[in-house]
Image: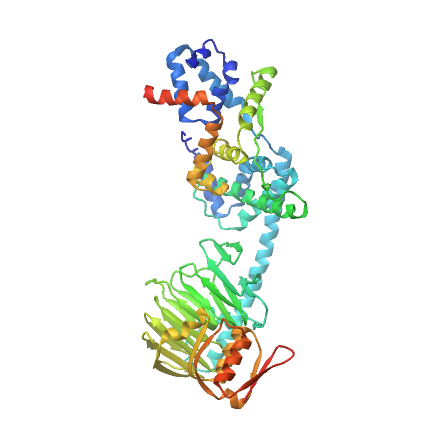
Amino acid sequence: MTNTTARTYDEYENTMLMEFLKGSNEAFSYFYTVFINDLYAYGISLGGDKDVVRDAVQDVFVNIHAGAKNFSSIDHLKFFLLKSLKNKLYNIYASKRVSTAAPFTADVLNFSISTTVLDSIINEEDRIIIQQKIDNLLTKLTARQKEAIYLRFIQELEYAEIADILGTTQHGARKLISRSLKRLRSEEQLLLIYLLKHFCS
Amino acid sequence: MRDNQFRGYTVIDLLKDEDFLRWQLLKSEEDALFWKNVINRHPDLAPIIEEAISLYKTSVRFNKFSMTPAEISEGREQLQYVIGQKKKKNARYIMLRAIAVAACIMVAILPFLWKKSEDVQQRDITTYAQALPEVDFNAVDTRLVLGEDQVVTLHNTESSVQYGVDDIVADDNIILQEKVMTSYNQLITPHGKRSTIIFSDGTKAWVNAGTKLVYPNQFSKENREIYVNGEIYIEVAEDKNRPFIVKTKRMDISVLGTKFNVSAYEVDHINNVALLSGSVNIASATHKKDVVLKPNQLYSNTEGTPSIKTVDASMYALWKQGLYRFESEALGDIIKRLERYYGAKIVCDDQAAHLKCSGKLDLKDNLDILLTDLTRALPINYLKNADGDYTIYY
């Protein structure tokens, strides 16, 4: 698995983080704007209802404002926000489920991924096919695998952070992603890769 | 080889290719190697692959859910409002606290203004603890009080509380701590219950029935102070730079790292400290000179009069294993302990109360069995009243 290089933030963003840590309301507002849609999208992906997610996101920000702010980096802040939101949603839906007669074994939160191909230079017919192809690949994955992939490649979290959110070890998080890879491959391809690895290196 | 099929592929063809999409999706090294190989065989595909990657990046989005700009600015305004309200509330709260603290200081200082006191210097935790309202030790549940108003109720007979780096685990509850402000917490263990507490420095205390423990949510850099009204057995984690001080109404016990038992029920005539290992320094409110205790020494403070004797100190910590050993103790005192331990009311007539007894009781037995055993060893009888109270008579 290649390591996506950690995003670097520019000087302005880092100054804002310092201000945020000192308790500046302006910086707080700034990070609200920066991360609101990441959080909202994650909440919806977890299966949350629009209004519930919106309220939960507000709560997460209120808590972070009141709590101790010892974030080592902007990435750390983002991770903490995502994790807090998931915990919040989990609690909301776990308590709701008691009243509804949902099957006991069902997970409280189920991650799903939906694909959008933007209207750029690709014509509509092709866009639909590309989207279907990607969706076909994704349906082969479990909800946890999808979530791991989303957190790793879309939200660009570190494996340690993904492990924390998914309640597993770092090794477990890596495994979730390497297993996904295997699921998306046919037998024939696996053999081919094996041959390539051994005869081309 | 399969990669021949890519000959003549356009950018759009690649974007519809499962292998290409998987590579973009999971960015695995294996796939990267596969495509490097394709390029090696068909160098003319290189620019097309490159363009397909960049088109994928600009066009494909996952879980593209977003709030409208109007919703976002509405959310931001609402948040600023909520925070503003909280600040106002905090300001009011701080003001009230300041007044309360000032009042406490006045109350604490007044006696010192009147008489030149030789008392142990009253530190804030003692002042704070003694200013707290009396607690009801006959309550059903153990209570963990965080700061001014947050109460966590613990239902177990033997509860455990552990302070972590930024959370508290109390039986099944996990409480996240906001370490912005230092405040005092209380662990109130009623009669009939026991608890253990592990502080953030690793010090562990076993808390006997009918005990109130007051301590800061985080220890300061200079020392570790707790206040006890009741009985604890404590194993202090060593920290040469931060002495651990167990404060009580009549004495302060300071240590660097040891094991000892403190029985300091404010309602009892006798308070004592039994040292199992290490060394402790005891400053009492009534005596100027501090006492340094050696292992297996018992310091007793009877209504302000101190005494030291050599004992088997481990005997004094047996209660945490549910055993109670005593040597020539008055039955009245033994009964008092049993009352606390079991959370029961036992009335003992004068003649019986003065009997001196030695022996061992298994506190895991129920109270009826235990009292029956006592009637066999002593010239006493007991009655269980209709309301569940007990009467012992000679």
